[in-house]
Image 1 (tube, rainbow, N blue to C red):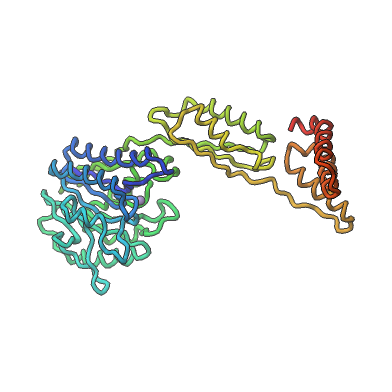
Image 2 (cartoon, helix red, strand yellow):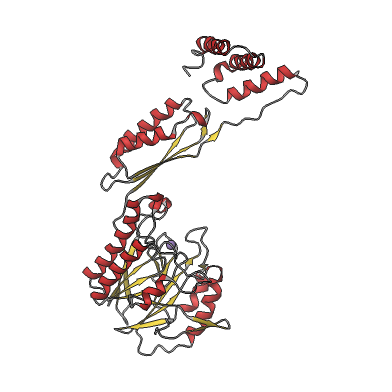
Length: 422
Ligand SMILES: [Mn+2]
């Protein structure tokens, strides 16, 4: 007996508003379907977040039905639980995954809860908590319970202890929940100790939810997201699905292999700007980075490239043309998408004010210090401050615009060279 365990496919996700990215999520789902058929597995487990959102996009539903239809035709059962993304709204109760269950495309599992007790009934017309598959395999399922995950698990473990598993050789729990400590900032997580009581009943704990893959103790398995739903996930290239061979009664009773799925390449770069004192210096550094990293960048399929500018920007951020930087990336690598993020912080210094100074002295000091923050004006900040205040005086005196321009022109001629060609 063999099965595929996948999770967090996120069909219908139009990442960055890109049609191609929407197609990528469809493509990876159909790839897993194709692998299931090619590998002649007996069943497929989907551990939640098959869909990106509960209001499923019609095109995403079409892809789901296409893939699930192929599996049905091949006689491969599909067992699913609901994740946090596709779960029915508490007012609606009925989700699109329920709909797929009703049409016979998959078995959607979840226990009924009565007075805090879990009722474990076989899957029937109105769903159910478990399904018995040929070959002595039983699959239980628990949907996403968020903050109530611990409570749901306790109730489930109690009910499970009273179940009769005679004639069942291999028990799987399919669940959209995370193991604590794998990745911060996830809700719906459990500690290993929370799970330990299940160990004597469950042979394979099939998790989804956390997009980073992990396996613990040859017992808990989480395949991660087959596509890259957020760019942080690109740090874990070994993601996809588990291909599992069951050998009941043997030791070990199963072998699980994590198979990574083909997906859109992502490349992330970071450029520190602290020593780049002019916009042109930044653009030159970007060009150098593009040249240096070019040979590591996958071109086919066209990648998603993210370039983050970080550090303290030595000049005004308004002078930095991010569209131009994006254009440089596109020109060099022809990516599917180029994303330039400005995470720089402005050169913010506290202005030291002398309380004894006169108003004109204060004004001069403040303008000078503001100009000093910009590396281009720093060498002649005192002089530029005087020019700025001259311009202010001219404007307050209602001088002719030509006079203002003339003052600026003269200042630029005199100070431009000191300012390093700004
Ligand atoms: Mn997910």
